[in-house]
Image (cartoon, rainbow over all chains, first blue to last red; front, side, top):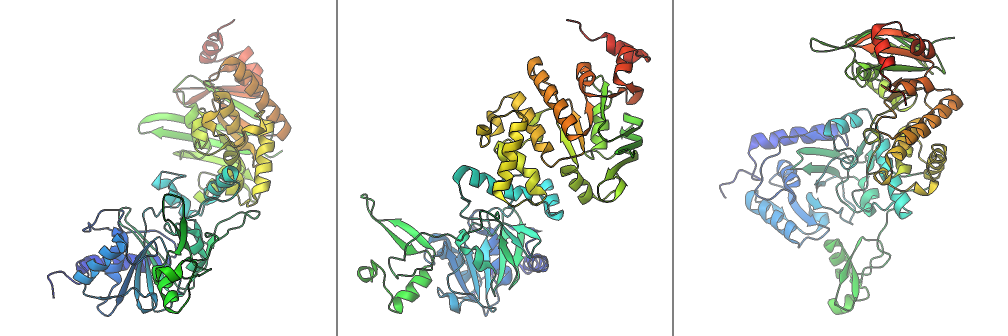
Length: 285
Length: 256
């Protein structure tokens, strides 16, 4: 055992965060203010997500942490170690075995179940921030459901680029009421947000928590003549051959050779273990 | 005929100081009223109180809404008042920068009100925006330029287009020609007069420029120290001023 309280935060703080989470679940998409604590990591590294995870974890939980879909990048490794040390919970890289998944900028490819909780790290929770900088005004716009401005952003996209060029942090409307920033996940992941698992969003610096309960309607905003499209790179994965997963583009050398690989490392490994192989799969394995 | 706007004994105080007080008038459909007075006379305070930007301390501002008939806009719910503010009402600011979104293209600026009332067809919104750019004499090729790339006069015309696109019935204008040079002023006044006639708009214009009210307004209200000192037909008030302050105001105009 160690000298930390379970999951680092003191019990009163966790209680305060749980109250914010419950309120968020009761009002889907509504940004609940909470007294965000200093965490032993810089803002922007997931202080909000970590606090939500800490308040959610129980000693029986199994934790998975992903960063841009990967289990083995700095952010994911650090946060996983943090909870191994301060909470002593079991950790895993397999999506199916995890009960709590903290994520930065991706939703896992494998379908989540009712027994799982997905915790997002959110840099800027306010979808209207860059259109209307006054927080007093955006709060009023949310309460009065004045969301015309969100479409002005999409209009600007089409007029400048000929299509809705917003590719991540694509605004959604939750249960026909609140417009919400889904955190910077690619818009490929937007349709997955109508899922069986609980989705919690924590923004540490901005001191906001919001949530999407299971099976809640999540609609991506669009125009009638420019409908929403969940886009991805038009390739199969070069390692596992998957055609349906979100891909990262990796530059291999100075001559411009490149490969596309699943951003969800666990999904890719599972598929390769099951015998699937892509263009470069054989050599890599 | 039913008045479009009935103002009854409106007063706005800034602490112990008077912003404006005891203002009452009726405005009928298609009528344009001017409010003149020196700086600090309470014209803008009055206009902002009428338009719902300030909450008056006393009085009623009754607007003849399309759906429910005459309603006091001071006591109506905030969502309803804001809805009115982007459908049947329009507000033209003195500085175009206050009324425009400077980081959004001209087309987006005009389209914002349309999208705010639920229009979700990009092509239709863009056609509308192009049509209105034409009406305020801005070339359609500038539709994707930002207002920051426009001259002062163009910005003001864009602001007017952005406000009139939803076909409002009442327009509040706060010094619409302030800060523009005379030839641009003349163009803007000509345009405004045309639009007011064509759309049958009612308007309340606050200005310190007597030439503007002479050209646009049928009726005139003269304010001094928060009080209305004289009202009447524009030509009558300007040609035969009764109150000492109005006489001073009229005689202060430089003759070229």
